[in-house]
Length: 341
Ligand SMILES: [Mn+2]
Image (tube, rainbow, N blue to C red; front, side):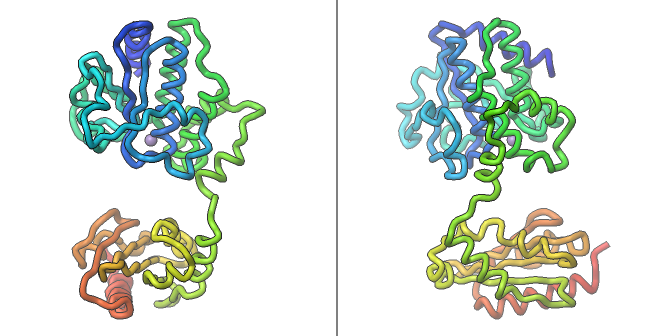
């Protein structure tokens, strides 16, 4: 991987003071790793006098609006084609993803570019080409961007890791490792973090914004949720239902429910947590989180849904909330008493 990174670095350096431009393509539904990695690389390439853009057609998620260098983003209207200026002189670099489809409506910009490179850490679903650098051992794309910046520094003699680049890469690393606790966290993650940290870096602020910041609406909704959650089957199953009127009452939105299911699942002894959300169109969205005692994907499959063994979901139609919850509790109870092999 080091040789490949060095080769990409040499190639990027060769574009210094040339008309060729680098367009950076992090995946859609930006997360801390995708955006932090892209902005750090953008700042570094600017220092090397490489023409570079970060074309985005989605707003920066509110929880990432504290990042430095956000003004460097090029907001583009992908409804038209005007944003792809001179694709024949453009190097497209995909970040934190390997397939142009993962860039959403920006996909033509990746496809029409004169050359395409990839820097990613997700498992590849196809054979990789020479210019596709994928390291599944990296906890975050930011680890690969870090290596790339160090290689660019070596080859150019120009220092590239200033406070902003360090802040962006640290945020990306914290984001993808859940604050250095997920199983992808490696000794290498800590080595890189040790090199990025400095006295002025506000780690507390980064973790607060990424993982803990709430809102009054969300807090009140959480209170309602936790107080009305129903525990059954010796407290091994917990369910909670919410309708649009309740969300209105708390001036909350559907987004405020994100992560709420983990609060229920985190209760010791709970094997299955489920949240039923009645939508404005009458459909009911159901989320499931389970311990190893129940396969969430199998339970969801009974109702045409799917997902992973520990997290799954489905959409129900033609039921009232009460009917749906009663029926689901029955099926879940069956699953508990007849655990799958
Ligand atoms: Mn990532």
